[in-house]
Amino acid sequence: MSTPPSTPPSTSASPHAAISPPSPWVARFAPLVRAGGPVLDLACGSGRHLRLFQARNHPVVGLDRDLRGVADLSGTAGVELVEADLENGAPVPLLRDRRFAAIVVTNYLHRPLFPAILDALEPGGLLLYETFALGNARFGRPASPAFLLRNGELLEVARGRLQVVAYEHGEVASPKAAVVQRLCAVNDLEAGSGLDGDPEPRPLPQLPLA
Figure: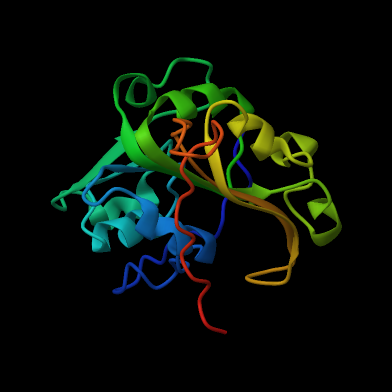
């Protein structure tokens, strides 16, 4: 189930006026995505991450049940928009039939999709996930446990399937007070040389300067 929708994009002369900037978490790890590899923004909303990866010369796919927030991208070269209900219990053909260099999910949680998301990552593909966690109710919506990750839940999703590059869980003050959980993980558990069976570590992009 999705979290409550954000303010819809403006219908004024500037279609980007109400589009939030990319998540700093997603932007930080974007350089780890294979150059030129296809990127899926799942529950893409206003398309802030579609725009981020398009600017980085990736072909991008936006998947949502309501594509009005990305209507201005329709017909743009390298941008594919797919309208689908992610929560009606039916398989999502895009996740079943395609493989992606990265899948981005932010401010959205529908647990039954986790297996399909992992299966849709190409070898070496990156999962960038960020959404709200238990404790967020003290700050407002979402407040239902159905929309909130449990402690360490994203780590459990990745366990045995993905190499965890970075993980966070805690309270944040910006862009609004919230409790969030974040994961960056890569679909690669092949043993690295001299690492006693562990996979080769990925480089950690530098944190942005304050």
